[in-house]
Image 1: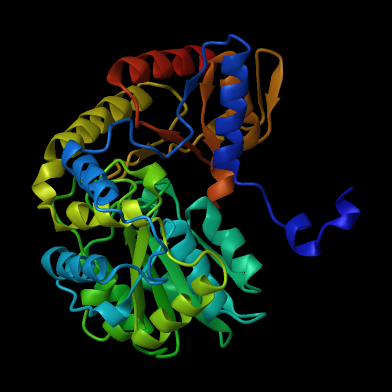
Image 2 (image 1 turned 90 degrees about the horizontal axis):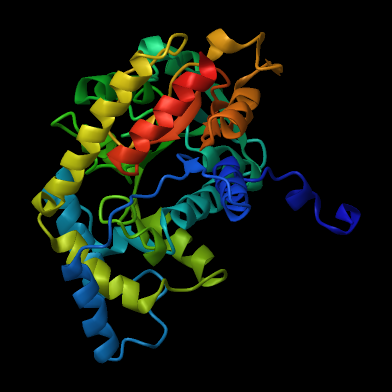
Length: 395
């Protein structure tokens, strides 16, 4: 019946992260002991002090429509957070609160892109960037990287990718799926290229900012010359284990913030009122409240990387942030494992689901067809079991 649907939806790809998670749930329901390493969701609970703030908001009857761009108190708190953590002087007029960072990204694409505008995506990139850009009429331009380059692009690569049609550059740091973190020096080199192209805007997705093992973090908007052409995207889903609360936000030049508010006013209006009130407490909290969770993720990172290095045929970088491993699995392409031909990362992902009972996501979804993404946002016990089974299935 697809002929009755719009070309837009027929041409839209399904999110492969969500599709694999759904398949894993389906197999679990059939009684199979599936370990899902497919979704990017912390396995921690939302901190109690944030839950208490939500309960207080309910008792104080925050049950009516919220302002389209967010409560004034929340926007003030986000400005304080940007100054404290990123040395960015945003004003409330620069802030728009949305129903998750994904809606923030969608808003940006819709208000910034015209048909044929090119958007540079350092690959690997988060799975939805490509489709969000396409839905807005933009043309995604992938710039490939590899495990040898720590999955980061160079200034030279960026310069070569720019054309007269280039409108934006989108990237995440720490990166989903690779866990790579751009240093200030690396971002300064990229900014030097962009300085020669003043009409190009940057989307800096910093949702994993606090899940960072490198000891440093740099927002590209803090580099001289970049503040007025950067849209900084963040939220509370990952760091505060608030994925279901659905709160994201941007800091952007005022004309872009106003445009995003205009767009959002016709689509969803303001984000959830109770979640917004709780988010005030979250973003005002000192990041040190996250130390235990970040320490746990670092311990899991070290465990997973050591187990991957012990599996012949896999190549891996050491991710400095987020909670993903992104090994290169191309050495298995063209081989036959237990009667199954492995032609690409898609095949290997399905093979691991069938033979190792482990759900992961093909790197093709992230713009790197040589890799698979494995989330380590689960217990160390489950991780040991999963990678033991992966090693046996690949032996």
